[in-house]
Image 1 (cartoon, chains in turn green, blue):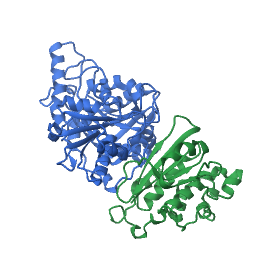
Image 2 (tube, helix red, strand yellow; image 1 turned 135 degrees about the vertical axis):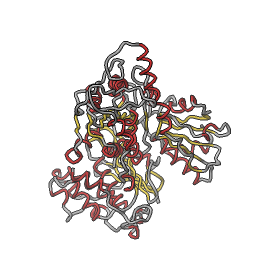
Image 3 (cartoon, helix red, strand yellow; image 1 turned 60 degrees about the vertical axis):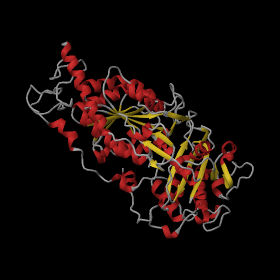
Image 4 (tube, each protein chain N blue to C red; image 1 turned 60 degrees about the horizontal axis):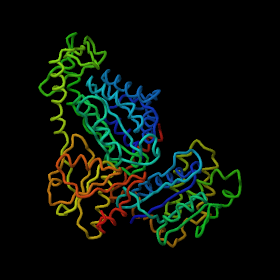
Length: 205
Length: 373
């Protein structure tokens, strides 16, 4: 099994944050993940993408077309929509939709100006839900990564993914099958997983 | 982890004690990681005022006997080449990471390319032996950095490590056993500690293998002199021309031994395949992935992954005239193909990409299977 996700948006919108969270969450779900960053030499605006491929049998390079595209920006929706594979799913944040884009119901995260800064995290949750990442894995990860941020961003009582697409809902592209409970605790070779010390080093540094 | 983090971890495993660098995409992540972990590792990390200062600080740190490095991109490397020449003449070990991106000049700062292989091979004034590495992925970066340090200190010759944006900025899943701590390379320390003592210490002794005991600044009761001018065995400046010739010969006596350090990379995949895909650095990973796609389609395919570039070791299969050698690289002119050709390899086809994007193996496999080379 090999699947791919492309997250796109303007520089400064949190494309890297979503991509990093999702790639790491997929790794914690015992997949091998590979991600490449495609960005412009600018601090804000423009077009950028974070492309992830994940597999249970090695991931070292990128596909041409992607199974899921998540867009944070209308211009980026236009630029990257051609990279959607046949039968793939194109998801856009509210206001970024074009053509056949599906827009998750993010409730306050889209409507309330004070919460718009959390839009990227909400979209990360949507992308995670679509790829079969469990809410627990993502919530733990967000708590770790944003330990020094406002508590509101890590509030587990209102995971946007639950509202956006539902945790257990089936999707037309087969992604509900991607999390294999039988593989829990195993690495890609079926061996018992050992927590990588690298992550602890990074966290403690 | 990112490729840059793997490079930094490989440096720690390689015994690095000092890094000086000036930030430049895509290499900046190396010094930021080493700086952020410095309290735990004890590594000194300095952001220098520019790349010239950075490389010379690293050479100076090496003079004190500590393992030292710097990291930059093409523009910064251009500024560093005089310092690399200084490291070569003083025979002070040094590791330089060159994170490639599309040039010339500022080029495409955030995109990927492999355009500086021949620059790294020929850079700096004067002739001197050097090692060049090009990690193929993050696990390779960890291994390679350790070896770059060991060999640079063993032979007192600079090691240049070529990465690129595709390696440096990407996130890779790396098997935990990659980071198993290997025993230290004792031979690398032997030269540094032998024959110390007194004012008559010969840090450039004319040894039979060309490797002289390094010594280090501040060694107790030992005067260690280094000079960027040509020098005698004690390190004193000399204009004695026979001594100059003897020193040049001494420096180059190391090269045949350096050549023996690198075994030719294995042919992987179907060894009976007529076509062999060859890549170096990250394009080697692409060659491997492309070959796997071709095999899955039922097509015979083999590949070779080069992570140790110089001294170049050629697998005899690549010299077989019946084989179709296809070299894949992220540059316009086919720099590695040129090097292989100089070694007697008949390159049948070159696949080059130079628009700032990495290769996509599916695209390559389609091109190769359609015969559009």
